[in-house]
Image 1: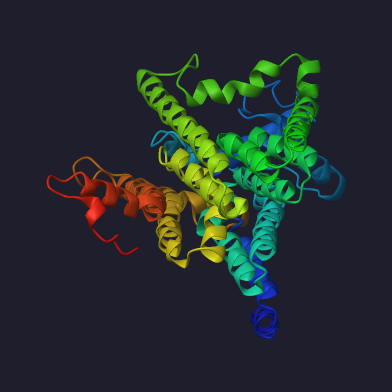
Image 2 (image 1 turned 60 degrees about the horizontal axis):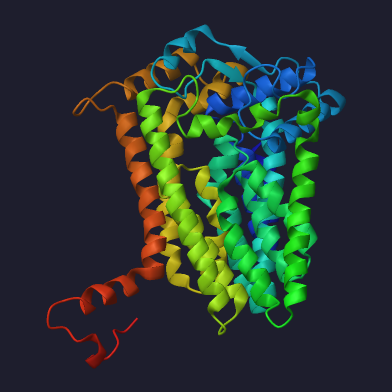
Length: 460
C-alpha cells in the first residue's frame, strides 16, 4: 500500500501543467473524504433511490423535498447502480446509534454504505469539475490571461465550501451553481435560448440563482442596446428556453399528478408547512423579508446596469452577481447554500481584485468548522460498514461532544456557532469590500460641518 501511495505522489510531483495538478489534487481530496458523511442527507438520497426502484417515483413516498432535477440525477444513479454495480444493501439502521437521533434535528441512525456514498458523490464531483472549468473558461475569455484563469479554477475546485457541500454533506448545490455560471457564458456568447434553459436548470435545482434574473435580463439589453429589436428577441428567446426546460422537467410530475409536491420545499423553508412550529414560522417569515429586500436590490442593480453606458457589461454583471449572491446568503449562512457564491467570488478574485481572497479564506475556515461539527458521526459509515472505528466509541465521543459545558451550550453548539459566524462574516466581508468605502464616504459627508465637496476624495 505504501509503495502505491509513493508512486501516486511521485506521479503528482511530476505533473507540470498547473491546471492538471490542481485537478488531480482536488480529485484525490474528494476520493479521500467521500466515505465521510453527515448521514442525515445521504440517508434521504438512499430513500429516494429506493422509492424510485419500487415504482413510487420521487414523491410517491415521503422523503424527497426538492424540485425534480436532483431527483432525476438520483434516478440515473439508481440505473447505474443496477446495471454496473452490485451494492447490495445501501443503508442499515444501527441500534447503537439511535440515541444520537435525539441530540439534534439533523442526526440519523440509518447509516448509508461507503459504496453508496461514492455512487452518489461521484456525479456531484463531476459537476464540481464542470463548475471550476466554467469559471476557468470565463476568466480566460474575459481577461485573456491563462494564469488568472488557473487561479479561478483553483479557487473554485479547491474551495472548502465546495468540498464540504459535495464531499461530506452530499448536496446538489454545485449543480445549480454550475448552470448559473454557464448561463452567463452563454449570454456572453449570444446564445439566449440555451442560456434560458441552463438558467431554468440552475433555478430548479436550488432557487438562489432566481435572484439574478433581473441583472441577467439587463445584461441582454445592455449588450444589444443599439439594436432594440435584437434585444427584445434575445430576451424572448431566453424566456422561451427557460419555459421549455421547466416544462420538460415538470412534465413527468404533471402527468403523475404530484406537481404540488415539487414545491413543498417552499412551504417548509418559509415556515408555512403543516408541521411547522412557531419558531419555524418566525424564521421562515424573516427569510421572506430578507429575500424580498434582495429582490428589490437586484431590480435596482439591473436598472443601474442598464443606465450605465460606460465600462464592460460583463464586469458589471459579474459584480452584480457577486453582490446579489452574497446578499441572499447572509441569512442563513449555511455551508451548502454558499456554493452558489463560490464561482462568482472565485471569478472576481482571479479576474478583478485579489483582496477578496480574505473573504474566501474566512468562508473556507467557517465551512470546515461547521461541517465537522458533527465530528464522530461523520465517521459512522466507515465504522459500521468497514469496521475502521468502534461504533460504541464513536457514539460515546459524540455524546460527550453534545454535553453542555458552558452556559448550557455543548462543544458541538459552540463549534457550529463559531463556524456559522465565520461563514456569515465571510459573506459580510464580501459586501464590505465591495461597498465599504462608499458607506464610509457617505457617513463622513453627513457629519456636521463636513463639506465633502471641498475635500479631496478618500484614497481607495
